[in-house]
Amino acid sequence: MGNDEGVWAYIGRIWADHGLLPYTGAIENKATGIYMVYAISHFLFGFQAWFPRLLAIIATIGTAYLLYLLIKKLSGAARAAIVGMAIFTLTMPL
Image 1: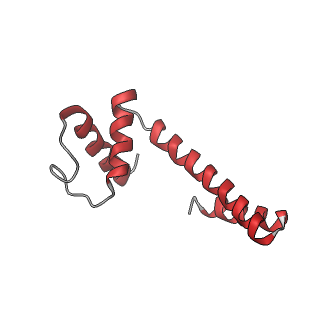
Image 2: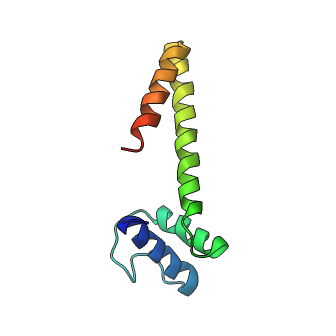
């Protein structure tokens, strides 16, 4: 777990355990959704990192599939859609 993910997990944990809302006990400028994911993760599964990462993987796969459908509809070519989806998927880790 890196620095950013550790801060998000900490803020989510204090939100889930102590009811301290984000932006009141810590200084961070991310959207509330990231803290909600970590708070729900901590509430349901305790201290671990696989649930938020699994959600991120599912979101990336879903976005790649929606991108494939959009490119296929706009261009009419399945090959172009596959290339666009592959470029998106391969550049996401960067």
